[in-house]
Image 1 (cartoon, rainbow, N blue to C red):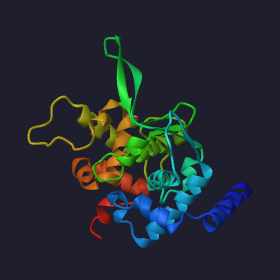
Image 2 (tube, rainbow, N blue to C red):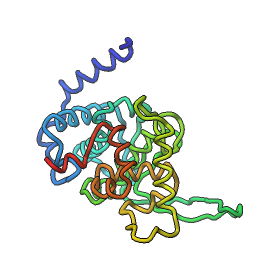
Image 3 (cartoon, rainbow, N blue to C red):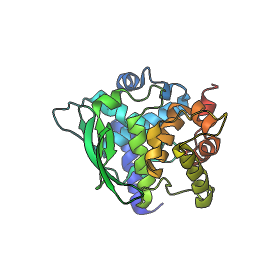
Image 4 (cartoon, rainbow, N blue to C red):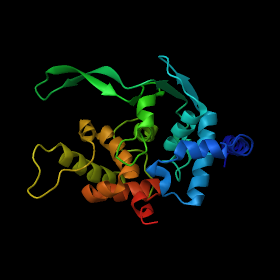
Length: 260
């Protein structure tokens, strides 16, 4: 461990010791959310510590008359920390600012089709990763996240931050030595193309994953990560190879947790 990493680790230890999340605030933030319900006591404790560090290291900026209290900050921190529970909070070291808006909002997108024609349309978002690094989250969508129905705006945007750690949002984050880039891209590309296919093979059920995943490879990754933590049974059923790669990447198995 280098001197900078050592000092960072010491500072984070002090945060956990001196400014922990109060038990009642933690219980209120995670209560009733199935995405947390199957964590064991050790995972719960480590997640709570990560969330305390997350709150200490991030700046929360409410805009457009949004109001964010400590409980909401804890919920955001808990949801964002879940994917990096076994990866470490340094995966978010290039993420400093969280902009909080009251509810979903519209942006104008442009898309060029195969014939070279540019199409412009409105898209409603509950959150997004902005070009220079901040993440925008809607209070309305934060409140709707974590209920085990496949939707989780915080985990979705956190997945984009993980994907972009290498400077490119392409659905392939920096991988551990145990996973080759070829293995990852083969599995994810096949799943992505299957979702985009206009017709399904006879007898094959429609995947339960949100169809927004078909928008681009990076959105497929973000939605797959949402599904991994929110609806692991469906993701494992529909895209087993993708699911197993995510287990190896995150060092977590939400499907296995359900048997506890």
